Amino acid sequence: MRVIVLLGPPGAGKGTLARELVRCADLAQFVTGDVLRDAIAHETTLGRKVREDVEAGRLVDDETVLALAREFLDSHPEGVLFDGFPRTLTQARGLSRMLRDDDELQVIYFETSEGTILSRLTARRVCLNCGRIYNMKFQPPGKDEVCDDCGQALVQRKDDTEEVIRERYRIYVEQTSPLVDFFRDKLIEVNGDQSVQEVFAILRDQLCRV
Ligand code: AMP
Image (cartoon, rainbow, N blue to C red):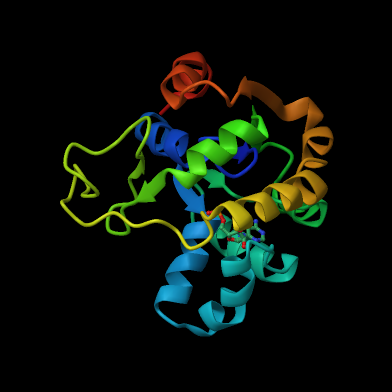
């Protein structure tokens, strides 16, 4: 089985790249943040448990996230693209234990500056209906605040305010950046300050396989 992990700070372009990659590689996409936000919106038991942490920009506990990832991996033997997982060393070790020796793991690491992240995330809008991501400065929709693909109103995520973005970045540096060393021999490094189109052009040959 093939597994791709997108690793990098919030706002590095992981979600936008993931949308390109699932079109050219036969992989099921697992977006931890989307699964958690969906559970919150539907007020499920999981949603009620994680709401406070997600809205404050803190990480949800490892046990909860590992259980979600394991379930997804087990039900998608065709291969998985992980966006937003793993985010701690405990999660990374958990993922390694879930994989078999003949599974192929590629980790794409987006090295991205804090300035880029802040300017991207404060201008980010998302379509809750189809998941398309926009940037009001660099990639605005054709019509103000409405999704080009499905016509739904775009929204700003609650955790895309400057204060919460800074907290998410601090947590990334503290808890997630050690994964760069953990996955050193699986790493494909890209410059996340570039546009996602430039990143995709660089990665296309290496990753697009059906
Ligand atoms: P994201 O959409 O990837 O920026 O994730 C939004 C929020 O969901 C994060 O700030 C965390 O609160 C939570 N979250 C997403 N992925 C994880 C993870 N792997 N471990 C713990 N919390 C997570």
